[in-house]
Length: 201
Image 1: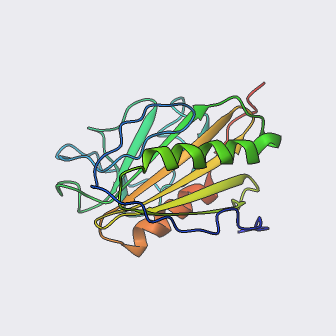
Image 2: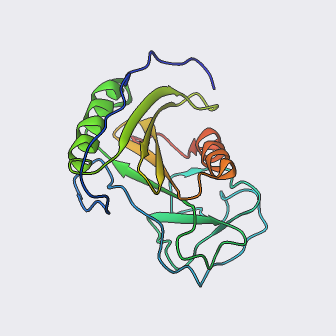
Image 3: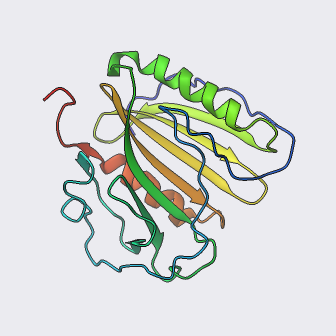
């Protein structure tokens, strides 16, 4: 990774309550999402690049790490899910989703966008026993990215918000097994993501 921003979240919040799924649908922040309960219908792809496969569904391209496959049953034109090959039929597989959303912030206002994400996450985590941490840096493509990590007793969620003018790409990892390969796969997708065009083109 390139230049690292000063740590903007020098905290770990311990929030008490019962663990469970989030259901807040506020924009521009996406709710925490857990893995599909049943992934019996998964298409296996040998390609290392998702660019051609997903062309037209997302305004960008990225590298899909070897050993990860698209979960067709849960993917939509707006949000694509991946699971590790060999775990397609697990009840709660580690999974990575990717989608693009819009917001009211230019890329120059990324700190305001970051603050909005922090406030949204704090609201979502009220009553949940979880640790929240964050970092700001650049992807290997030079884009500003904010990374949030939410640790619960049975799952770790990692969210990568890649910033652009009035939009963002969210790469959302749900890691039940604390697998290093899942962390590496999400990082690879984030680092390889390239916006297809400028928002105003």
